[in-house]
Image 1: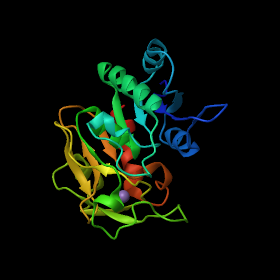
Image 2: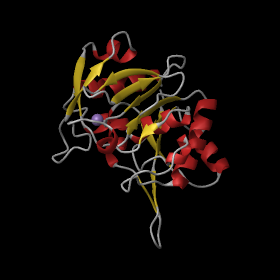
Image 3: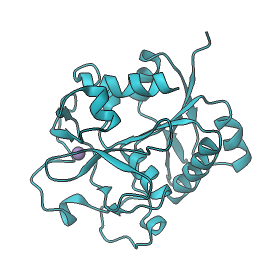
Length: 235
Ligand SMILES: [Mn+2]
């Protein structure tokens, strides 16, 4: 049987003389580990080319990266540490259009859960330390191969059925998070401080977003491995 092809969106980094695309290698390793063939997708370029690439995919991972521009959810940039890339925002939006038209199963990770929420009409906290009263380190310090805080699972959700536990541990590499949840989505997990860590779209077979990076800790945290197993099973 042919292995499923999983598209991975990439960061587009603007530099003075030589822009580049970037993808953390752990995404590729993880897709291979769980039985897929990773396909690196640019998030810039012509719409027709992005469409042709998405048509090759059996599933899509919306990966981490810079902050979604607040204009996408009707706000202006409020804090100096909000770092955006409008080119990537536009390209990823097209990729979402094509992926959804194709009924692809989609997993959003970190920026990816935020991309997904904004795409469907939700909003974001632009900077957790500035806007949320919490003592949790959502931008965790090194060493990075470890967990940082808990994810409290909402009973009755697919995540709860998957992991079979009320709480598990996650890593945390984000300074933004979901504020207003997009219509149609439901929360599957939160940090103890209320920050949304996992969402899904019940009327789609598999449209999940997680705020942590399961691709970096699946070897030490079984719940993160189970997220990829569920995604690949759906695909
Ligand atoms: Mn977190």
